[in-house]
Every structure is written in C-alpha cells, then in structure tokens.
Image (cartoon, rainbow, N blue to C red; front, side):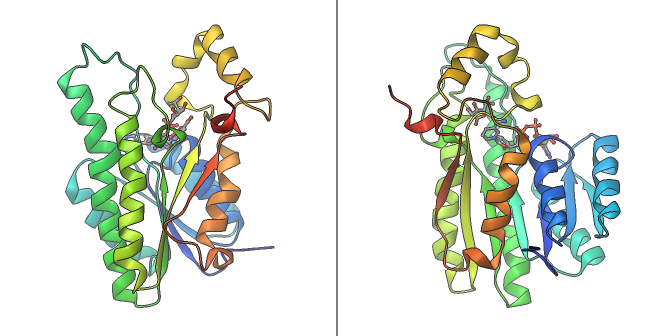
Length: 254
Ligand SMILES: NC(=O)C1=CN([C@@H]2O[C@H](COP(=O)(O)OP(=O)(O)OC[C@H]3O[C@@H](n4cnc5c(N)ncnc54)[C@H](O)[C@@H]3O)[C@@H](O)[C@H]2O)C=CC1
Ligand SMILES: C[C@H](O)[C@@H]1OC(=O)[C@H](O)[C@@H]1O
C-alpha cells in the first residue's frame, strides 16, 4: 500500500544514513522528495537518481542547516520545484563524541547550532509554508533515545536531542490550530557514519548489541516505517508524541 501518494516530503541531511533511507522510503510510498545536504554532492545526486528511478520527482538542495538562511532557501527552492510542502523531516545532525571536562567550546557550540538551532529555523520555515498552504501537514524530528538517557561522551549532544523533542511538543501546540502535526522519533543505536568510529571499538559495540532485546543494532531502513506512519494520514490524530525505534534498548534494565 502506498501511504504518501501525492505528498511532498522534505528531509534534511539526506545524502547518507537515516535521512537518505527515509527520503527513498517515502518515495517508495509515492512521495516527491526534496533533500537538503551539507557537502556530499555525490551522495545527494545518487539519492536523487534512486528516487527518480522509482518514478518520483526529487531535488537536492545544498546548505548548512546551522545557517539560519539555509532554512528559507531550502523551503523556497523545494516549493519552486515541487510546488508545496506536506511533510518536513528534520534529520540533519552531528555527534562528535568527546569527554565533558575538556569539551572544546567550538564542538559544543557547533553541535547545538546544527542539531537544535538548525532544527528550529528549519521547522519554523517549513511550518510557515504549511500555514500558507492552509491544509495542514506533518513535521517529524529525528530526536533520539538520547533525549531520555545520557552518554558520557555525549554531554553536548543529548541536550540537543531532548531539546528537539521539547520543540516538537511546543510546536504541536502552536501549530495544532493549523492542522499541522508534530512528532519525534527516538532511534536507538543505528549503524551509520555518525557512530562508525565509536562502534569500531569491539567491546563497546558488543555491549550495545547485548543491551538490545531484538538482538541487533539498527539499520537506517528501520526508521522508514515509523517515519512513513507519522507522515501519513494513518497518524491523523497523533501529535506531540514520540516513538522509540530502538529494538527495545531503552527498557532493558536487567
Ligand atoms: N545513528 C544513530 O544511532 C542515531 C542517529 N540519530 C539521529 O539521526 C540523524 C541522522 O543521523 P545518522 O543518519 O545516524 O548519521 P549520518 O552521519 O549518517 O547522517 C547525518 C546527516 O546529517 C548531515 N549533516 C550534518 N551536519 C549538517 C549540516 N550542518 N547541514 C546539513 N546537513 C548536515 C550529514 O551530512 C549527514 O547526511 C541525526 O540527527 C542523529 O542525531 C538519533 C539516534 C540514533
Ligand atoms: C551517535 C550514537 O551512536 C547514537 O546517536 C544517538 O542519538 C544515540 O546515542 C545512539 O547511540
């Protein structure tokens, strides 16, 4: 069943990892796609080619989400090519693992700017476009299990993910009157470039795997179904909600 037929979906950070899987997954469900990407031109172009091969329209638009100008530019260019915005997926993010006591100011500030400030500007720009269209929409934030639990080397990162979830709760209230639903996904540990180095440590990887009742680390495609659900009319009465997509890791105390 095609759940996103006729919809236009915008995804940030979509040249690789979860964002790319979600963009292509939404296209499989009938959506046209606009992808934001930072630097990886080849990754963005190949994602566009994959989406077009599915018979859908796709456009890749370059921009650093930490720059407030990028948000307006992304929405305007996406609308110029695809006509409208029905679904906005705020996915772009970084997690440069580092200890707390000597966290460099620039690492802390860059993580905040990309993950949280960038999300704020993007969500605001997408929401303004949806309000202008006048027929609702769906905004989805790629938050994290890290909105709920800490990480020794993620003291700069986990607050951005809790902040993203909080942003979705508040904008769900602000935008409800416009029929715009706002929800968060909480991925657990998904194998992508963001944690390639961290999980190169065999002991850490095996510890993470053992914490997961479903017995494996996640893959980017694991986020497609939950994203499509929240994007689709199946979730027409779901807003301000969050969904863990973690193989059960969060609930596994002992
Ligand atoms: N992989 C995991 O275990 C988990 C990931 N997440 C979140 O999922 C999202 C996607 O991450 P992954 O696919 O895992 O990592 P990834 O590193 O494969 O993808 C991140 C994407 O964001 C883009 N990006 C980074 N900075 C950007 C900027 N300034 N402007 C535009 N794009 C930018 C990257 O180019 C890349 O395409 C992130 O927000 C991450 O925090 C959440 C929970 C778990
Ligand atoms: C980057 C981490 O491996 C990943 O990102 C998160 O949000 C979780 O903390 C995951 O473990």
